[in-house]
Length: 271
Image 1 (cartoon, rainbow, N blue to C red):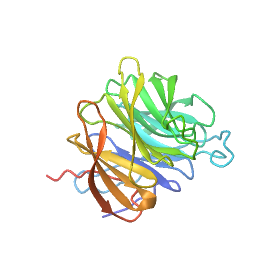
Image 2 (image 1 turned 60 degrees about the vertical axis):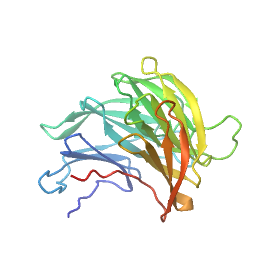
Image 3 (image 1 turned 60 degrees about the horizontal axis):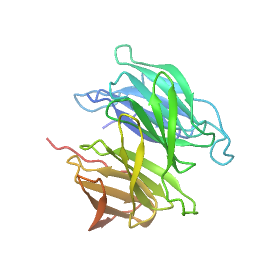
């Protein structure tokens, strides 16, 4: 159809607004984010109308010598955008201005702990909290969503007796029952399941389950909330788990598919 420059190297994350009129991209290599109008008549991307260069570094000598934007997404009210920068241990908050087509930087917040390396973010259903998957510390930090992000607690994504190398990747709320939160672990090769108290932000561990493969870089939950499909990048397979609607627990269904280096799963709505 068409293409546009992402305005940076190694684009790693895409998101849109609900109406599908804008696309947002985070460029890992250069630490930049950009906003593109979408022509809803044909799906074409127009030239970018919003752009920001994120800067900074942090304490990890291998991964944090420079800025690395790793995600950008709108909050639930679609008033502001939030971006996690793995390289600088920062969260950038922007005003979403659809009328004048711009990214207005509002605030920059630091992570709870130096070296966290925030990768992906999700908002809870009442937009009271933000949950950040910290790639470099194998943790999830819960932040109160204010003008700045205020950390309130951090939990591990891996069991206490695991001593190997691990990097969390994806983090997703259950699409129907918003009290269940899921995250993937690359190294421990598992999905971790938490129960979320939306009034306090408290996370209660429910389950770790092996992904039946290596390096679960991404996973997604079916729109009906009944199945979770995980993409195991280094073992070249997709694995399907059923979800208990009452407990949130996962059970392997035995359904798998071989595919080379899967890194992302999306569900397509055909109308």
